[in-house]
Image 1 (cartoon, chains in turn blue, cyan):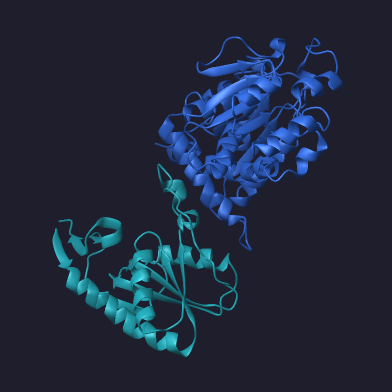
Image 2 (image 1 turned 120 degrees about the vertical axis):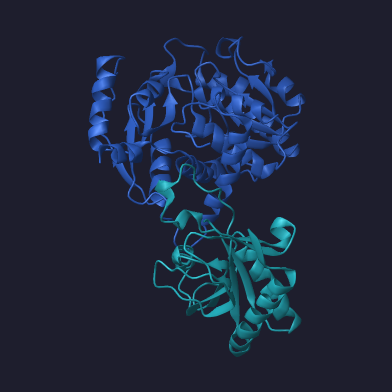
Length: 313
Length: 174
């Protein structure tokens, strides 16, 4: 069954996940044609509602929507906070008046996309809400790793960095667990939550984590802006203890371990610059696959905006 | 429900198609492009026959779901399959192949899909079954067999690779 909204990974069934991952492939194949656009969403409009600054996710969604022939409206929203209640309702009323069929929302408040979804017939896609979820990122991550390993079950992925503040870690680890991938968390004790889904191995030492035998290391971006208090002494110290240093990179290359990163990369913090040219770095593929995965999501969802028009007539 | 074409009759219809396409393919290299699903299986059979006759040709298949004109009326969008066009579309002599020609809307979508890969020199249409009732001005160049049907009838095609057997049924609604 098609859904109206795409809000988190937790509510997706395994069948839905498999469908979306399968469907991303034909979309990616379109990118090698002379015309990269298809008319599937001709006449539909996609509204970008980004309350938090983002260039990558925003442009990825824009390209995805445009390659499906949808009209893209970039709503210039103040990057200030919208609180629950009346303001959200005001926003939704404005959106209804714009007659968007799809609304892509990013906000620092967890749960806001769901609150909007409840009040509109448009399809709502969560593009990141607080530390809660970033489901399209998880989808593109799984799709990217699946290209390297067609059968993901039993593979191991080590997610390293600021797990606590990361919606990427949250959504991506959940999706990998759903697909039978073993997940390891590595980070300073202060940045790795003690609670969370079962089946996650926790590490505080990078070299010990590498002995665990991961097939891929997923480096999270150090998000200075999300830390109200300092969780580690300095950037240099972070790189030495939790980053891919030149020394660790040698070992990673020697063992043929893949590297992933959601971007944008802080060179010299999460990884040394040599990693960017590594033949098993999947970072650039993640960007391209992000467009394909988001096209698959847009094509899969069914807004109820058409039925509304039928009722009125 | 009645079987209107059995395995033999389908074989004859394919042979009829091959006979006509052969003449074209001998004059200039053609690319046989099947529309998924089942058009690709008919195309494969045509290609096998051309191969046997040692006539060089290209082969491709096309999923046209993203080009359908009725997507917003469907409760669920059709599942996408991969398209495979590995030859150069610019300047190609295309023979589009489908199992059944009915309203013509699938072919309209396929024409748009083909031209997004490049600008072919010519596009022709081959169909295993022409059942009539066109809704847009599209006509086939090659026809395997013509079936008399009513507008509301359903023509159900089953082919070996996709469905396990060769049979065409006509389901009439009273």
